[in-house]
Structures are given as structure tokens and as C-alpha cells.
Image 1: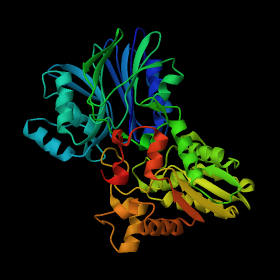
Image 2: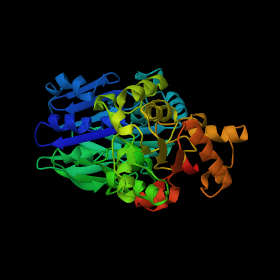
Image 3: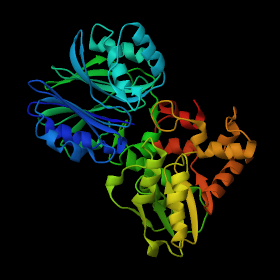
Amino acid sequence: MSGLFGVVSKKNCIQTLFYGTDYHSHLGTQFGGMAVWGKELYRKIHDIKQSQFKSKFYEDYNQMIGERGIGVISDKDAQPIYLNSKFGPFAIITNGLLQNADKLIEGLHKSGSSFSDITNGSINSTEVVAKLISQSENIVDGIKYTFSKIKGSCSLLILTKEGIYAARDKMGRSSLVIGKSKNSWAVTTETCAFNNLGFEIKKYLGPAEIVFMSKNGIKQLAKPDKENKMCSFEWIYTSFPASNHESLNVELVRERCGRLLAKNDDIEIDIVSGVPDSGSAHAIGYAMESNKPFRRPLVKYTQGYGRSYSPPSQKTRDLIARMKLVPVRDVIKGNRIVLCDDSIVRGTQLKNYTINKLWASGAKEVHLRIACPPLMFPCHFNTSTRTLKELAARRAIKALEGRIAVKDVHNYLDPSSKKYQKMINWIAKDMNVTSLKYISIDDMIKAIGIAKEKLCVQCWRGE
């Protein structure tokens, strides 16, 4: 996960760029970067592992001056990358995952390319994309060539002296949206960046669509492809509640997930709660449908802790999970609690640092309700889960069958099957909850409101 923001203005764009980029802080925890084109190119990158974007870029904010700029919150690589290519200098930021990065790097080495940016011991994937683009005669052909070569996903913004090129992933797995204000045009991963900056949504880019953005407006340079596979998890977990993807609001989708979970439930409870913050909207929907009170037995201390799912280090994830949620013991004690969350990925944080806090504070019962089906496959299109053994559902299958890499998981995906129920029972016991239910994949898709054929469900179906 990374968040991209770009702006072209009739005046100095730095304030809009600074805050527009900062509104993507929920998408990455490793690096922040901005590039602004004024009299010359100003580029700044900071490590944000131990501090927020705003504090790291406060001094740069007052020094970077220009009418065009791009910014990124990155989950993996230091960005933006600057390249002085044969068709002119440019700065580039990307969002996605290059599955075949090693093969691409090998090919670029053979063609004479060298790499200078190393992040955590690996060649920077954004530099790989920049070098691929520079193989062609112009930027548009370079983007098309790059999209034809990569396996995985990649959305990108390219800053030049004239303006900004924006290209959405060839399968549409992440968003890019164009907005307009009185004096500026902007492009963003998350539309929540527009709300307080005075931008009105003008266009959702389609898969593989390329546009050029200048202070005079936008120009389409490549039409969108028909095949669209937007990541379902954007609505369920990844995105900020105030954002829209494909014109569908994230908060409302999550409320619908909660309603559908409650519709198919028959338990007696006292209060409904969500794991802050990603489970809160699901819990609100559950409470509305069940007519039970929504309360906060767990409160997130500050936004500064960020997401415990995002950091690459398990040690860091565990520390954040333990410290950020504070139990409200007087709300918990003696109550039968429904606890809603977006997903169970590894499950260790939810079990050790959330559910255990409820029991330790005197909960009478804890009923866990999950707003997506059991995750069965690693994500091939973004930096989240990388292996089967990380997934709680696969650990359950290993316990039941003695091996984790079962080829046919069809029965484990069918809520009416005995194997599915055995898997759920194993996870419930492992998580130490009174009961556990997941939403079905059909109900999840119904809550999102887009045809199944236009959604990526790879991490559930392996397709």
C-alpha cells in the first residue's frame, strides 16, 4: 500500500501538496516524499517510521516552491525517484507490487541500465519502473511498455516541467481520481484528500488509462481498458472512511457489511463494538441492524500509532497493537460483547492484544464477527501478506489436515460445508472467543455493490 497525490496549480502548490499527501498517511509507514517543480526541481524524502509525515516535512514545506508537485506516503520504497532521461528529466512515484521485479532487473541490467537506489537491501521498485519507462521514446509509450512487462500492479504519477502524467494500474487494482478546485487540478489515490482542500471529483481513471494534467486541465492520452479488477479490500479495510472508489463510499460499504453480519446472526448480546478504527463502521452497521447499542470498550489512544497491519516487522506490528488500544473496563465488565473487525489475517494481534484485553477486563462473552471471508491466499498485488503460513485460515487447515498447502480449498470456502465449519471452530478456539462468524463472499460483494467480475477476490479465491 502506498498513497499518491499530485497537483498542478496557477499559484504555489505546496500547501495543497503537503496536506493532500498527508491525507494518505494511513497507507504507509516507511517513507514520505515530495517533489515540486518551480524554477528547478525540489525533491525531499524522509524516513517516517518513528514520526508522522507532517513533522518530518514541516521545514521543507516552507522551502519548496512551485506550481506543480507530487507526493507519496510509501509502504516500502523511498520515493520520488528522479531520472534525467533521453526525453527529459522527470520525477516518479508508484503504488503497487512488482511480482517479477527480479526478472525485470535482470533484463534492464542486460540492456545496460544501472541502479542507484537501494531500500532495505533491495533495488528500489520505483526506480525499476522509471528505468523501464525510459526505454521508450516518450513517457506515454514508456508507461504502456512498462504495463506490458510487469506482473503484479502499478499505478503511478510522473512530474515533468510541463505537468503531471497519471496512469492507473492496468487491472485497476488501486484508484486514481482527478479533482478540480478554483485554481488547481489534482490527482489522488484516496478522495478523502479532496474534501478539506476544496476539490470536486471530476473523473475516476479507468484501468490502464493515462492522462496528462496541466494548469489548463486534463488530456486523455490512453483510453481505459475494459477489464477492471479493483481490490475488494480497499473498501473492507485499506481505505479511509471518507474516501470513494468507483463512486462508492468506503464508510457506507462497511456499514452494509455490518448489517449483513447481523442479519445472519442469532446470538444474545449486550453491546456491539468494533476494533478501532478499521472495525468501527462494520460495528455501527451491526448495531443498526441488531438494535443493540454501539459502545467503545476499546479506545485508540492517538492517531500517531498508525496501523499495526502495515509495518513490515512483526515486532513493530506487535508493539503497536499492544500499545495503541486502551480498554475501558467499566464498559467491558459483565457484558456480552460482539466485536467486529475487518479481517483476520495472521490473527496474533487480535488474539493477544485485543481479545485478551476484553477477557482481562471482565467481559462475560466475546463474539467475533469478521467483515470479509477467511483469507486463503497471499496478495500478489500489494505488500500485505506474502506467504500461506501467515494466514490464520491456513494454520487451521494445517491443524486439521497436517499440511498448509492444500491444493483444493473449495470446501474450506463454502460456509455450508463441514470442512468450513471445522476450520471456523478451530480458529475460534485459537482466538479464544465465545463464537466466530465471517461474512460470506457473496454478502461482501453485495455490500460493496459492484459486480463480482469487476472485483479482485484473489486473496479469498486464489483467482
